[in-house]
Every structure is written in structure tokens, then in C-alpha cells.
Amino acid sequence: MARRVPPPGLAWLQWQLDRQLADAAAACPLMQDLPIGVDPEGADAWAWQDTLALGATVGAPPDRYVAAGQNWLLPPFAPHRLRAAGYRPFIETIRAALRHARGLRIDHVMGLFRLFWIPSGLAPAAGGYVRYPADDLLGIVALECMRAGAFVVGEDLGTVEDGVRETLAQRRVLSYRCLWFEAGLPKAFPRLSLGAITTHDLPTIAGLWNGSDLDAQRKLGLNPNEEALGDIRHRLRRMTRVRADAPAERVIERTHDLLADARSVVVTATLDDALAVSERPNMPGTVNEWPNWSLALPVPLEDLERRPLALSIARRLAARRPARAVKKESSS
Image (tube, rainbow, N blue to C red; front, side):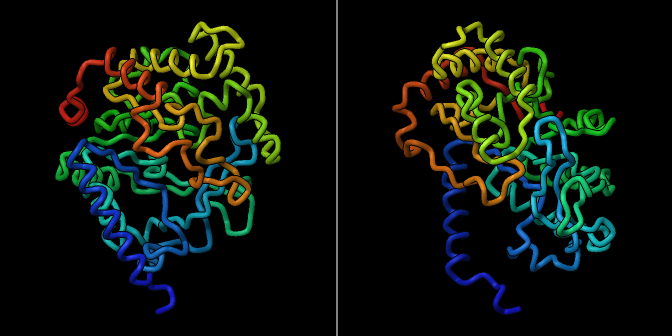
């Protein structure tokens, strides 16, 4: 057991991270991300092992974007064990995420209602859904966010069962609206939403436009849905009204013009799009085949304000969107 306790060096790094987050939060409001699970080899899994179902991992079933399904290799909480523990692991996780934050994005918010469990050693297609006590978990989120004075975004993309979005809207949880998933323009996004163009799991604008993302999926043997990706690219060209041979930078600027017109109370642009990066940060369906969460940006963050495209995006969004009282509108 002693071997699995993090060494002092890791504790020092956590302390430094906390200090840096505090400094960043003093300069501008931060929105933190709450992942769907914990690393099976991490301190959380060790401390909460009695509440986890260690014979399974969580993921997503096959769909039109990831034909093989997804296995995130994270052990799920066993609902009855979590309840018996008074939801303490969940409460502590929420509080830690909100320590320096004014907003909280809950990844795969559908996991508060049900999670797709995959038996260890099997493919995602062999998995099935397990129900969770959504009312209890949503109540905890509401209470902790009220205490922290933070708004909540529920990432509700992909396979969403009936009634989930309605329940979240009733609780004033912002929906997550991504242009790649929507048939219409961002100006049709609901008011209580976070508007975005893409996510870390989906192609960047440049990667979609120049075809490099599709090429990467082919090389990785991921069986990409080429028809769906082609449809998105066609819609992108139609919405931005650019020529088929337009440079990616022009497409990126025009797409953010559309995002600026979104009715969403909050919109977000990615650093990858602001720097015309072709590679997506995370490739669903891979573990070591793609450098997930390890791709460096082409320039240091300190140089971001000197990059013409990044400046252009910031100015376009600022010019077309009035200041928003996010807390007031999303928690009233």
C-alpha cells in the first residue's frame, strides 16, 4: 500500500498548481473542468477504492462519429456504494474543482443520470448503461456551486437520453452547444447555453478544412464516418460563404464571426483554433496511438497576444458581444 502513496515531489507540484490557479483566478474568472472519472492508478482511486467498481471502465457506445465506441479506461463509482458513503467522494471532487473557479463544466453530464460501463477486457460494444441517482447528484452540484458563486455548464453532446436536457434546463444548468453537432447557425443556440465551435474530442477548424483530421483517423484505423465529416465541412463552407480553396485562417475568422452572434450567454474559442492548429488535442478511440493531451501549442502562451489570428478572433468576439452577467442569468 505504501508504494502507491504519491511521493513528496508530486505533492509539491500540486501545491504549485494550486498557487498558479489562485494567481490566474485573481486576474480573470476561471471555468474549471470536472472529468467523468479518475485515473485508476491515481490517489483518488486509491483513497476511494471501496466506492469504485474496479471490474469495469466507463466509455461510450459506438455512434456516427466514433464507429468503434470509446473506452476511457476510468473506473466508475458503484452507485450504491457512493450513496452509502454519503456521496463524500463526489462532494470533495466538486469542492476541489471550484476552489479557484467561477464556473464549472461537467464533462459528459449525462453521467449524472447513467454511465456506459464496459466490462474489463472487452470492447465498448459489449458494454451497457448503469443508472445513477441523478436528483441527489444534481442537488449536490447546485449546493456546492451556490456556495462558490459559480455557474454550471453541462457537456450534453453525443448520445443523450430523453428528458436529460429538460431536467438540466429546469435546474438552470447551461447546455453545451457545439457547431459541429448543430444543423443551424449559432444564433439559434438557446440562451441558457455555452456556445462553441468544437471540443477537444472533435476536429479543429483547420483539421476539418484541410482534411488532415480525416487523414489521421484513417492512418489510425479508426474507421471514420467520412460522410458525416464531409457533411460538416460542406455546412462550414456554406455558413462561412468562403471559397473551397480559402485558407484555413479565413475560415476560422468567419466561423468565429458566426459564434459571436450566438444567443448563448457564454461562448468559448479554443487556443487550437486561435493558432490554426490542425491536430485535435484528444482522439477518441485511442490510448497510446495518438499523443492525447500531450500536443504542445505552436507558440508559448506569452506570445499569444502577438499572433495575428488570435488577436483577430479576440477582437471579433469582443466587438460583437456585449458584456454578459453570467452568474445572474444562469443561476436565477
